[in-house]
Length: 78
Image (cartoon, rainbow, N blue to C red; front, side, top):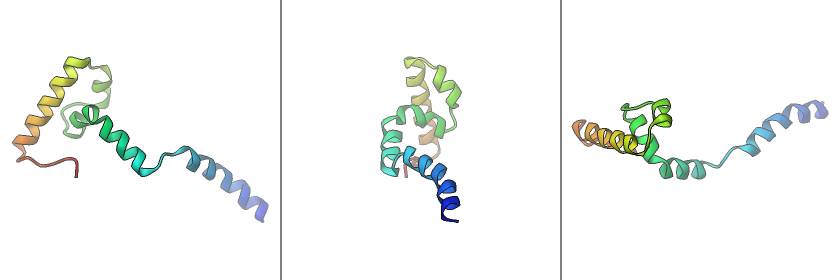
C-alpha cells in the first residue's frame, strides 16, 4: 500500500519540483510586462507579440496605454 502511494506520488513530486515559486513567477511577469501589457489589454495576442519587432512592440504598448486611459485609468496590475 505504501509502495503504491509512493509510486503515485513521484510524478506529482517531480512536477512540483519543476515549478517556480509564486514570487519568481510574479517577478518574471513584471520583468516581461512590456510583452504582457498589450496582451492583457486585448490589443495584441501572444502570437502577434512573438512575431513583432521592437518598434511594433513599442507601438502596441502605447496603444495599450491609450486604451487604459480611455477606460478611465483602470489598472491592470492590481
